[in-house]
Amino acid sequence: MAGRNDTNKRKARDAVIMGGTMLGGAAAATYSGTADERKSTAIKKKIREKREERSKARKTKSANMKTQLAQQNIKNLERIKEKDLSAKDRKIRRELINREKAAIKGLKPPTLVKTAAKLGLKSIPGVGTFLALFGSTPAYRRGGNVSKKHR
Image (cartoon, helix red, strand yellow):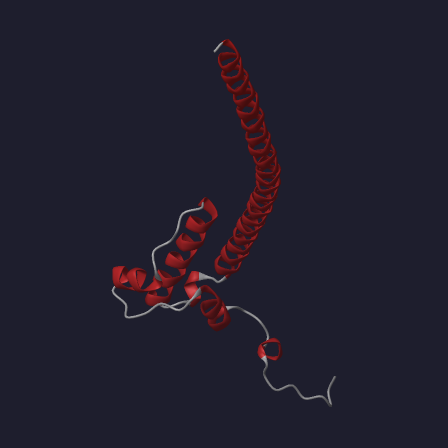
């Protein structure tokens, strides 16, 4: 009976060794799988960071361009003399200047409809339209007829 007992112990020991080997193999497979996941996660993170960096640069550039455009519009609006405008047009000019100053500060100005309602008007022209109407540019710069004979 003693031999049978040794055989059972040997089988049990071999089973433990086999189980440990299989467990180690599974752990190694899991580790190698997570290593690939870590690499891909790191790559995705780098791509995301580059994308965010480009986006931030683009937003900064567009904000700077909006500020420059607003400053140019203010300069052009201030160039128009108030004495040459009617009372209604003076109100519109002042309000357009205020809107451009708000844009420089980074604030979002109210819509033209709300601004017009505040002034008691039905509508307000945009800055470009207002400048085109009252800006002091020669007729030929705005597309008027020019005699080509006299050039």
